[in-house]
Image 1 (tube, rainbow, N blue to C red):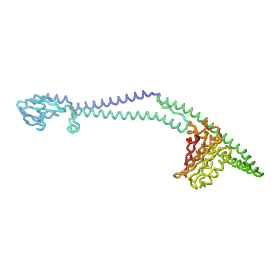
Image 2 (cartoon, rainbow, N blue to C red; image 1 turned 90 degrees about the vertical axis):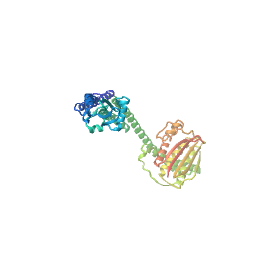
Image 3 (tube, rainbow, N blue to C red; image 1 turned 135 degrees about the vertical axis):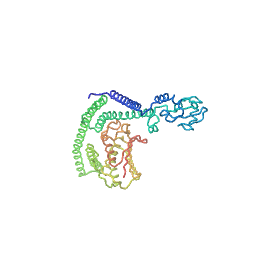
Length: 451
């Protein structure tokens, strides 16, 4: 079977439909003529012919009998002055017949035709339908017009032919289009290793060829993307592991410092170094985790003392703000005594956002931390006095490794910190909202988690 075009398919459809209608007409007209030939159907001309043939006899016969009346005709007898004298037409209808035929002079009154025969002392009027009729009385009572029945039958059979042929061609085209849907579904599922089967319909095959080219290009693009992602993850993982060594050295030397005689200020600085190195170890672990999927991370949900958590958080951020000459405004309003959450992840989420705020706030600026509860939802608000988010960052800053924001991409944590924070919030069935503060002009990050 060769390749067809849609126009040839529709041409076949049109020809098939025309042929079906032609066959329907021929069969029904043939059945009609056959009925006429065997006397089952009486056409109008045969009734008129029979009346003309019996007219002389009806004029001269002494007394009209019903057997004298041509088949399929009704009759009524009148006196010369219009008085009803009998017949198969009842007396009530006879007055209308006399008025139509004699007084008005008409020979038809839908749906009847009339024939007036003058007798010696009477007037005979024959009435018959102006259509072909069935010879059988039962059929005639059900279908008064054989012609109308034939027309209705042709229309119904033509409509049935249209439905059947449309269904057949629709099913044929549906099978061809299904091949397109199969390919689209496979591409949608990123199942790109398959061979496209042609439909042998020219227009559909052109679309399939275009999809095949798209499939190959997409497979090549995704393969490169998957390879790049794998290499990036391996590099990040290697970098994270390499950072462990200098961090261990920093912690070791910090512990040695504690064994020496230190002034109060020096001891405070050593504590900041030790706390920061511990925090950096957490960041390294986060960096390792960033190379893996957060979907498989198992939360360690437990009862968290909020006052203790906030104190731990403030101690970490105080040192960071002091190093950067930034004022920290700590405003903790109403909050629950305990929440059910993953303690370590909760700390990491807040530290990431606060660190991001500190790093993007110029020296002498302010970072504000607020907390409140409402309807069993705990909200954290971090605001800074930096440059704020660009329009692009407001849309994409929580995406992993996003670095497209010119105003806030110069620091080391920006490509991952907000992504990690958003992932942790999502793990707790919460969300993170990025905005720019109208009051400070800087960034405004709201974290909402149920408790």
